[in-house]
Image 1 (cartoon, rainbow, N blue to C red):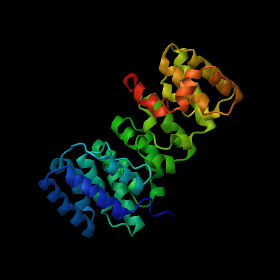
Image 2: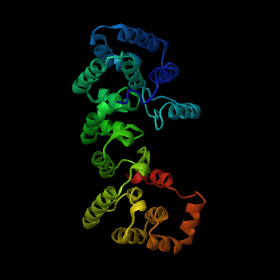
Image 3: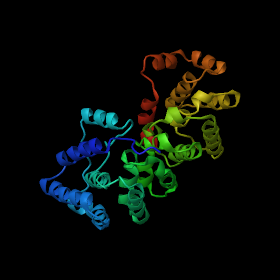
Image 4: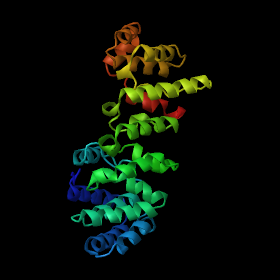
Amino acid sequence: MQVFQADVEKSRDFLYELFKRNTSDEATDWLNDKLEKVKGANSARELYWAFSAAPRFVGKTVLQLQESELSKADVLRPGFNPSKWTTDQTARTLLLLSIPHQDQNEFLHKLNQLFSTAEMGELVALYASLPLLPYPGDFKLRAAEGIRTNMGTVFEAIALDNPYPADYLDEGAWNQLVLKTVFVGKPLYRIYGLEIRSNPTLARILSDYAHERWAAGRTVTPELWRPVGPFLNAFLMEDIKRVFAHPEQIQQEAAALACSQSNFIPAKELLEAHPVLKNKIETGELNWNYIGRKSLPAN
């Protein structure tokens, strides 16, 4: 059984410093009082009240992070990225990290109670905090619930800038997460671990989705071909040829990148036939993050 995926104390110290730097003295005093009570409380009453009330006392300001702090976050927990977190979200995560966790059943009971009664803002904090919580294997079903939600901000909290899904979801749930990200028009480049968790089944699912869109006279995001490229075969190559023939440059760039990821001989030959794009890929001028950011207005 894996108990820790990140050092709880170091994570707490890191988030606390971010919180202090991004909020008022009054908000920090309020949180200090609640953290002490949560640490020492015999019941969960103080936790539940503080978790619910946090926005009223600490606000919802988006954290302003420096590059060095983003790097430190990634050291604390590979893939951890709080660049879009808010002060109330950070305060709530600090409350979660202050719950005594030596008793696994008691810890999980408190977390499950919060998940069961949470409103949208609370769910965002809960799902975004998953990569820092003890007993990570016990939250797989919760993560799968997050994928099925109809609440956009909650889905973003689990799908984007969150390393938990790549590390813990089984293949079926992971594929569902990627497909839904495409379906709801969110950027794939913000899914942590996309290359590592790509698989032939996902490539086929995304191809099927593209064919449905094309049949309806619609386009697909060029990012869709990112998880497909490593698994190109004779069937998928027909998709890539179609994308190469698209009048939009960004679609052609995505097709070239997909070919560059493949060892399939026809894919290599197709890329050779587009020397300008091939050169941009080899020099780093053209990459998937560029495609993701460039296609955002269309999303």
